[in-house]
Length: 348
Image (cartoon, rainbow, N blue to C red; front, top):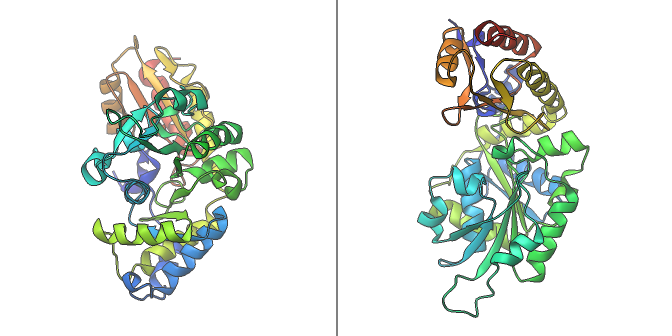
């Protein structure tokens, strides 16, 4: 079975760079980015800063590094950050906040991935009581991965960030898939980022670049991030080769995210008609579908193994929950092929 015949729905991180992207990378002008001398990296940083309405930006290796560098730059050891219980920062970054920054997380939030002001108020500590860690940072995620790619509304984000700023907290947006939210709602990225002191954007997911994320924020904040990027081993020298892929993605792969959303919706609608299958979080808002396999002809593990033998890969979150993520390497035929296989194995 060739790689091209595989329908890989495990994540949108599995995308391969297009021929045009590879050409842009091969032809990139480069310099030493640790010295700030890589022209392609500098151009990408300027473009992303302008996109989000921020003063400056910094190219880093990954979405996790973007979050962790931002966390380090916003806090001191012993501080507390408010996050959602299903936040990527808390759930999927190998306890880096504790290990690298000495930060304690306080998890509150709604099922859709948002955090209400009253929930922040319920855990907020101003630092006056020596028994409790001071609450210094609010972190939101949009789209919210483990809430099924949900889109946090501008109103909900504004209410949460207004409360945080009024109480002396900094605000950070994990925007790994924020352009999915912008495409789904026809929002300007600057409008989404307006209430946040820092925002990240990942290029190696739906945008299809092989490597890289960017942090955007105030000039002084980004200067601190640059130091911590170096501390965390993220100085990448002639990184323009990678930044060129990200620039190509920004110029060519944003509007097409709507195709991924359409494919996810088609997949979810097909899944909803299968025996023993339920959509965990309803119809998808963007490109992520969570579904449960319970009481079906086979277990999720058996189903995933059967599909894998046919060249169809699913993400398994637990014994009964699967995740399917659409991306630029999954087309309409891939979705129909997947649904046909699922019908054969589970029955309609």
